[in-house]
View (cartoon, rainbow, N blue to C red):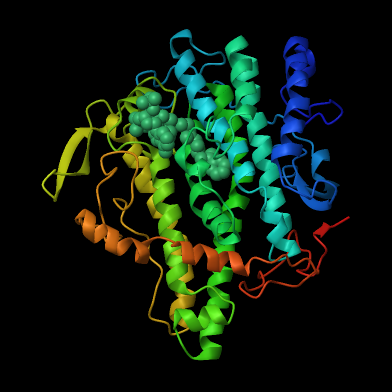
Length: 474
Ligand code: BYC
């Protein structure tokens, strides 16, 4: 279905035929725009930005490029085309027709899942709102804004579901999505990672690589949902999400490349010398990686989760790419997880597979994270540098689940509180690291120019050159 752009709210859900819903969403729209102006990218609302907008949800139309001011971006409601006679693909309801309405018994659980997902979207925009002032190039500035407007649209995606299927409760939740704020002491965002400050571009690249990738896996799980409107909404969101991870992947790769160039020029791997030359040393990069990877791991929930089991059993939230599994019921299957044995060691615990779903999805996520790390390391190896980047153990610095509060080194060794305290400065960004990275953050806005701490990208956006003026500042 093509997207109707003549409507005040662009959509492909026939919004015009449902006056009540249309009116409710039209009342929410100015509140969203107020939120965008107040909490969205600071200082650039009047800039002309080269942005991608969807004009249809198929391969031809989902990426149409043009120059516009961010507040004029056409945030709207786009669902992937329906699959005829779609069946529920997992759990106790396997093989029954997918729901087009919310089943009464699953109402509050579904609402909670949708609110949790929805909450992350504006949270990330809030976290990133000051970054424009220190962009390393116009190319990067444009990518930041592309990510931001799309996260804004993903909020619309969830708000549509709340308004269309959850009545008054849903409308109230939609209001609250604009009232909670990242890092707010009284009304923080729901999930931990989305309250972490993103004050520099290294954090931004780590976040888009690691945290947006959690988004990919959670959206893929929800794209399997027996609640068809949620599944179709998430399917389309995933199309846009790929670019966000690209920004993180290539961003980190470019930082690594620049660091290696400086190391070669200076003929040293001494972090101090590299810092003096204005690049980010690999140990600092590793500490940032440790921070964002471990924080993002928490977003999958506990290793053993009765919530996850009931989401799966009831057909609300499946596994990413559910069709690749043989057993979609998973009633008798088991999973083995590693838990602390309480005596300073690790023990294995066998549990029903359904209860271990969070861990199954987390495992798939970790394997996906490794792909980029391997790619970055190939460049490191080619430069003849011995120090590679690694993912820390999944037990390291966890705040949710079996490993929460257990002192574990990045190598996965359980240690005493004292050893942890001694090691932490080598494992996680210190105040000094953050201050140093912050000291490199100066705005570069001359077309084609890059900050000294990052290499240029291999190519521009949509076949344009790197020198193209991706953002025209007023
Ligand atoms: N922080 O059984 P448990 C994205 C809570 S990112 C705080 O272990 P369960 C994006 C949990 O709610 C994707 N609290 O786990 C990326 C529960 O609370 P109650 C976001 C947490 O229930 C970048 C309790 O702990 N999408 O899209 O399976 C930019 C025990 O729960 C956390 C979703 O999250 C945490 N990290 O929850 C923009 C999808 N983890 O019941 C966007 C929707 C758990 O005791 N959410 N808790 O009060 C879900 O599927 C699930 O709620 C969770 C796991 C993934 C969060």
